[in-house]
Length: 484
Ligand SMILES: Cc1ncc(COP(=O)(O)O)c(C=O)c1O
Image (cartoon, rainbow, N blue to C red):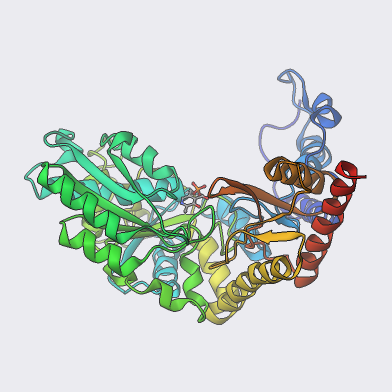
């Protein structure tokens, strides 16, 4: 039977082995993005072993069977949804933190770096110094935490503590655009406000919330006694990267007594691109903002941040009740790391046990600084414009959205008599199976679109050009199949 204790002093050996495998993995260009399930599943299937095979064998199987059959998200041609593989420094920081700082509490350097990195992140993204943050696992939880603060604020103004008493009284509403990420609906459900309290405001021809229609909705609901809990604007929608008119929307929210939340999970770092900084005008009106370092900043998945103007609202919304296993363990004037929980992040969100995420953001920002990160964002936005330029130049391509951030939606023109949606679906499927490029798709005004989203730190202009060539080649192939 293998030892039940990890062997000491073997980290270097095993991590070096894993590092070699990861380097090789990043160099590979598998022909098929979605390897056949049947190719690798038989190797993984099996019963729980009665007797383990030991560290060596377990790590070997991890590297031989699991690693090569994962998704291709770290490869330079992966531009699907809004997800990517981490940068090297982010991955190394996560590995170090998982062993040396496995929790973000206690007054240690990890707890300190949690706060410091939140301050840096706020500064990087143009938030003022009064916005205080808390990390969580992703945009979903970050939005939930922000709307938890909104709910606390809205009900407290009516003399109700919703965290203690539950939500009662008048119907409530959360206003957002039809392009909203559905985590807002889920948050409304979890917070007891109800998914149906989310009111969808139509968008304009650039997929931005129509402030005039928002005003009409707010007015109508006010006259019917509906309590506006929050207005949620997007700084970078998931579908097209649209940025809502933040100032207009924020001013309306405040005029009607609603909390103003900005979902910048993807697009908030876009503020670093001087060509579009003006689109973030009104950011300072936000009562809460979220951003996901695991999207555009290249952190490993599991890192998002919520910022609010008043962190005590988070405390009232999410604090835990006193617990015997904690009370008495800490002192008023801490001398050592064990004397205090440090900044009580566990009371600002929904997690007690939680990895030290701040150290990842701290490492990434230490590596690149503001200028380096800006260069990366500018380059990614440039890639989306490069695709748009190709699409404008090529008569066989159709540009469906003018890029604002690093997303470009376009499609191939279908031969006469064939359905453009079906044609582009087939094209995309072949692209994924036959090439190294992996954009995802969406619907733009009901039309099927190929949608690369450039947040991948390993992508270069040559990859983008190769992608466009591949689209044209497969498009021509399909066209001649249909019209030989
Ligand atoms: C605008 C927006 N908000 C929220 C989310 C949810 O983020 P996560 O997947 O990290 O939970 C996403 C995900 O793509 C998003 O694009």
